[in-house]
Image (cartoon, rainbow, N blue to C red; front, side):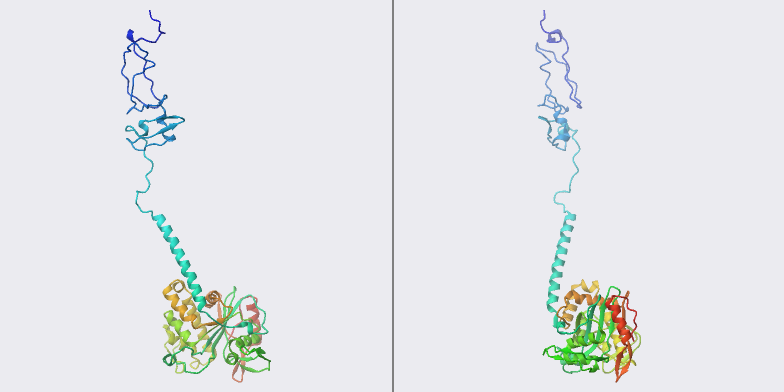
Length: 438
């Protein structure tokens, strides 16, 4: 008689044992039937290692090794992987044992391979930083070389300023710093002191830049003024002279005072360059290309030019802007040539090819800043704006002209007061200049 519950302990009766439980999602090979030796097969199932079958050990449920997305996987067949769900863990062929491992994650760049994006980014930052340091250093170097010698605060009874920025640009016949050989080569002579050889007002306006040449033979009244060196006051006696006599009498301060008195236009900045400095700047940029419409010669200045496009060096450029006797218009024709040349000079200097090229920029700045004299309030930025404004005269809404002339008095050129008044008003109000000059 058998006291065991039905279904238990049937090994002696030849019954087949209960089949092993299959794990979820795992196919396993069939387990051979076993004969019970008188013990409970349900509580002692046949042993299976679980290797190479997808079965796991160390987990009652046999499922832990299957949770590849919830634990660390080996990634390659034959390498151990770990699965973890709650407090269950195990090893399974899906995590590395067997030949059915999960596909490896996307491979990153091989170890030791250069990361070009990172290198380019770092290189760009280093380049920008270096350019910034060089630019700042260049600015302070150049700013320290500027000759701020003209004190416009000494100018008295000045007119009110307008909406435009005005520059008085003066070319003097100063021979300062020139050797005897240079004086001979440039045909400047050896006269002592300095006089104005050319004078121009440059108005930098949003409506368009305007360059106005002031003939040195212009008939003007010397106003009351305060001596730049003595500080002594001089009254207005109604004395009329040529414009360049004001500079010869008391320098840049009286020249500014005389121009403001006779035009009613306030001058914001002053810039002056001598013979040697002018020639050195032209040579530093490699010459200036100019189109000369008609051939001419002048023994006094040394000019000898054929018609057509040509590149002028420093010596030729100085001869070109100084020539006055080869033209029937005399001083008026010379001022037109001066405007034409300065516009070409500015156009070829204020370019990325010069500004961004240290091999051109430093020689040009060195040549110019050593010889250009400016007012005490002028910054390097203001000087740069002046050059770019000169460049703008030849393009866009720019305009170049002579001061309007109505006649002459004792050989001096008399300005047209009505036109001058209209011209000044347009500049002060930043209006497009419609007045025409001679």
